[in-house]
Amino acid sequence: MIKSNPQINEQSIIKSIAAKGLKIDYLKLINSGLNSKSFYLKTKNNKRILKIYPEIDNLGRNRLLNELMFLQFLKKNNFDNVPEPLLWDEEKNWMVLSWLEG
Image 1 (spheres, rainbow, N blue to C red):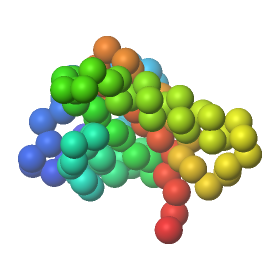
Image 2 (spheres, helix red, strand yellow):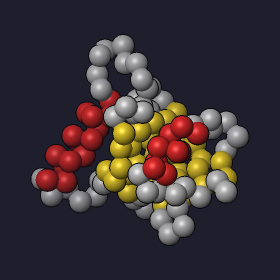
Image 3 (tube, rainbow, N blue to C red):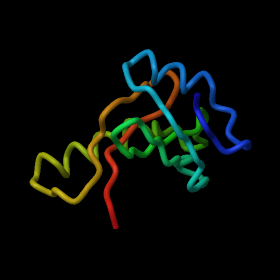
Image 4 (cartoon, rainbow, N blue to C red):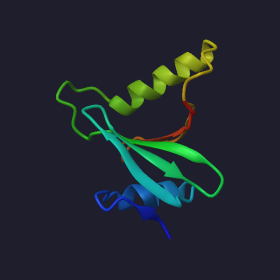
């Protein structure tokens, strides 16, 4: 059973994540801003970050793809202290990232 903050109503995203093979045990909203909503996500053995991006960007940007490409660029250029994109869905505008302590 998923425990979550009562303000979170993201069931279709949770189902989408589960369909990609990641079972969520706990979900809690950490931050909500203009770029995305950030959630602490816990599985049986790992901590993760879930980011949900807005569907509409008044400037016409794809916030998910911009962040994904930037994180991949940093990793490719040997920046190791950045979260690693693990799963994402462009249609539903979410990305699961590795957890960084600190």
